[in-house]
Length: 579
Image (cartoon, rainbow, N blue to C red; front, side):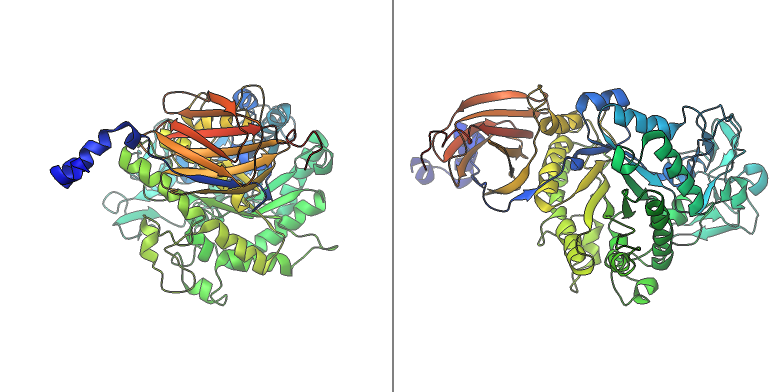
């Protein structure tokens, strides 16, 4: 009271902020292990690629073979196209082509590595209808989609690249400038005054293939690793980001991908997969992000003529309708997992920026996955909130789960590409830990981060917190249960139960230490340990204690950190027979 009567209010607040208790402001968390119980699968802890030896150390349960390079992979000669990512070139793998596929080919090696440490492989099956030519050279110069000798002078496709491959100067970007390239095929595109080449010959690099070509590949994988039901490859994706083919793979597929093309290919290739290996599980359509939840590449993000021609139904909802409307003989579906990619916009994904402003925005953007009231802080907000689609409010997982329930109940949900910040960002690592809580709570059945974190990076710590929190192999597993934070922008709270353990993930998203008083609906156990990481320290045990009531306060959780409370002994509380 003395301060309030004697000093200006602003000065009072400044002085209070210096007090120890202010630096450790309390955020209450409640946990009820009997409410909102949802079992979750370890497949949510997956990654794309990664070093095999390091993957084994961390213990990732799922390893994805995907990305732009997987859309055109010729398994018979072990060659992939880099597409737009690197001058539309065909890059060879194994050099000995006396065997089909070559011995030590990339795909077989990838699967073998995953199996060696007990992981499943998720393999992308190309559906684009083109594959790198079988006569693709083993050395430079490689076959390229936009040869300078054939199509003329080219210019950089973006500010950070060159006009041609520095190691293969006949391989062009596919972009051009009428001032240096007089071809009538150098035409404008986009709204940025840029030009690119059209009417190139896809046969410069690629050959047409049918589903039978990929069916042969699955037969080879079966002969090498066994059927899906007998320990072989269990999961296949229907290509990668099909609604971007007209940009990423425009050298062979310049036309925008439509609703009908996507589904017709899904039906053809999904059927081929199931005919070859009935126990295999298929994921699709493998969207690229937010826009193709609602429309095709022929539309203008959320709306357009292709969507209008399909009754105005959002693309993913329409795709689900087709899955259930076209069962295979015996009732099996051609697609088992709805497969989406999602990257938060606004320069928080795939980004090294860890400034306080970006870190806070990165962590707030997690609400795009589950909060129906949250308005995106990116260009997504510009889509507006004028109808029942609430475009400016992504609410991704509940939105698509509602579509699943409405249009094709029983379909599982996969998010096979996502990223919430580069490996060295502390806020990205904290976001990664919270993502696992969100995936478990909201009902994601499979997830693979793009890409596997570098060894000993901050991002890797988030996986370790869930896959080996005590350094002796203890994992977060079982079921997600109810947990509620009084302020989710300061402290995220997620709870899990398994056997006699109750585990609570607490993420401190602030720049100061936080006190967290927890209240449990019933006594959760007899003893507890607290593990965690922050920007300075990897996963380690922070504290330990006993508990005999429904309350526990954790003091001074480090700034910008992820913490895992593990309460044990719940199976001992009534061991003496009392009720």
